[in-house]
Length: 439
Image (cartoon, rainbow, N blue to C red; front, side, top):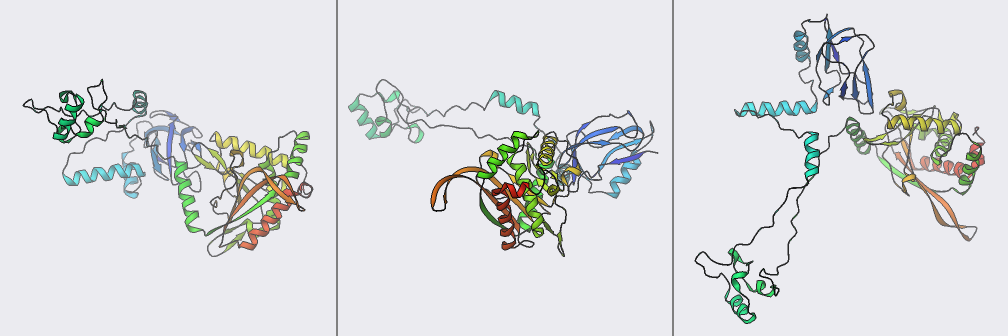
């Protein structure tokens, strides 16, 4: 019996998916476990496997198009089997089961039908047309030509003052193009005239052409926009910034990398120090649940990774129990999977705290939006040489600024400040930090 294959929910935040590529076509024999299509979710592009065996009878979502979760993706059954009745029932059961793009097109079609106007097929610019247009460049724009200064009856159109000045300077008015009303030669045309030229010397006006590109919003970017908007306008944010002297840590990192088989970055060290600090301040490792506050006993640190479509946050689980080398290797693997769009839900779910580091881009200080459901996120700037006063003497030190964004429903100012003091202590005294676990 034919069976409808529906758009799966591949992540906790997914509301719709885009079919990037169909790996099977109508008429192909399908076995359970075969990969039917590649689907772009809000987090990554993932392979979709069939749990049914049979013949692919119908494809409901073309490549590049979106469908909501549980929308009709395909139909699998026996070769030649009737399936239209299944689609009709599915449409009746879920009349609003359409993507935003389809809904917009359907709404326009209904408006056209109601007004009695014949619906014209939508003209969409293809990628090839866009490329061709860019190669040709912007349309050529010809500067407007002023009307002739001579009237239809052969008389010169010029003001009395312009005629007198032209006569004094020996200028032939019939050779000038007037800038006055109707092409009339006026005083400024005489003043702007350059000897040896038959065109008035009026300054030229630059004529430009407006242009822009409209880029479709990816599923990932839609989800980022939705979640960050909800976080920013729902959770009452406040911010705490602290300077940390990284002189000793820089020396310690150099010594560690001299003996370590895995290269340790400052970000790896910050993850380690943050995890150790969260163990001492569990309220910072918490989440707002509406009626309750969840204080997590485990420490799963999300690490923000930039990709072309936006920002992904893979998670280093039980970070407080891992060595620096383990953290470094895991972050490296997760970052590569994020860039290759191979992250799985288990890689990005379950964070209890998040770190966003822009120091490698030369950013000295910034604030970050909380990555829900976390109560806090740590924004890390770059290390910069700064004049310091130590014991009454001025010297140059290496300073890093960090900013803790806090959900005031969960974390108070004192709680956040104590957490930053502990973090500062670990980063300024490497012996204390690395004494807690092996490198």
